[in-house]
Image (cartoon, rainbow, N blue to C red):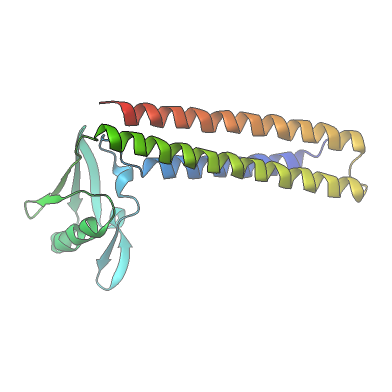
Length: 186
């Protein structure tokens, strides 16, 4: 009996790693408007640091523009300050009700720098996947040592975990390729 629970646990960890990578890639500016750019922006609102998405509706009405519609018009100035303090490099324009952010075109040098950052990030996630594989294999070896599974089951389980690792590494590569295309798109 191959330890299905150990394999399922390893797969769950790998899914979480892939989800984290998607989130991290979404926060990188590519020259195209996306509300995920604003996910990490926190606004000082009545003395509390509050995520921007809890204070306003966000949309990308045009490919190079983000629109932020605060539910409380009194928070417009605080939202503007938070955007300026963030490391996004965007300047907000507001008409008292709506804040608009123009996403500037990326320069060729900036695109190449972003590609390097994305590749480094992808490698970190591949390492995380390999660490999860190692942990799962160690759990299998412990189970074999404590006579919960046989040597054949451990061997089969290790092969299954390796297949999972290869699958998720391919998904990391696919995400990387997609993000590189977005960055290089003019």
